[in-house]
Length: 347
Ligand SMILES: *Cc1c(COP(=O)(O)O)cnc(C)c1O
Picture 1 (cartoon, helix red, strand yellow):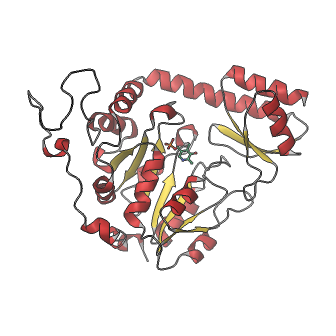
Picture 2 (cartoon, rainbow, N blue to C red; picture 1 turned 90 degrees about the vertical axis):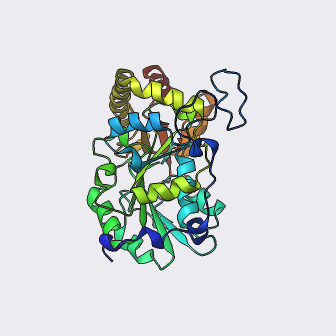
Picture 3 (cartoon, rainbow, N blue to C red; picture 1 turned 60 degrees about the vertical axis):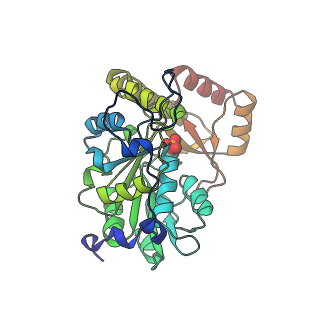
């Protein structure tokens, strides 16, 4: 079926379609008043006594400038994890529907499928961590609702080639979620530039990685206005708190601060590759468009444990499919990276 025949109406769960959303005090009155006695808040001003804006207007307007995407095509969540959960809940019927993901990849798709009682089908990546598009398409059945792709992929680090994603978008007739948590570190453009072309496309990003705000939990989602309105209907009314909105807005206005740190991380990524490649036990450094390297080594468990003894923690990815003897190393500050390299040299 062609993308133009895609009808989101056929994907919305019946109960979601039929339900009336919660209407909060701030939904019903959105203008400015002198006296607010509508939400049972404590009236004494302390900076956080009022409920947050349920639709995060100011944050979205700033994101709209940065990302060049209309605010109507955005929904924000308490981390991308909340967004991903909303997507499951909006479009997948428990015990009936299924989704596809492409391991080795981010673990939350599996956790959320389990939580929502949705069957998860795995289409393992090729040995060089590309999509096996024919396999993905062959696993689709009448109950397949969503295909989760992650690009740049975690834990492998690579960007998934455009033509592979395009084929899934055009031939699957499923919702396709592209998780772009690491896109700010990549040299290729975001799929948000193609939203108008693909009504089945959902792009997730986050402030947790390049923007340095993992602690405030702010996930970003970009999709058609129809998809956004379904997700808005089912989200908890005040899902992004006042402190998060305020902090995000301040940080998003500090363009120089953001760009400077991003540049440094990218430089460090390159020096780390050079340093890692000189270690005899490093057998392979996989290509990365993210803020980490996946490396294949001799005896990964041993290296992982020895580093732990030295107070350095990296991620052991040995148990993931195609990732035998691999370690994932996040790019840290120059000093942290130097400590890691010194420790590895002494092993
Ligand atoms: C880190 C990461 C996220 C971020 O999730 P948040 O809930 O926004 O912190 C999302 N997807 C992938 C693949 C990640 O690695």
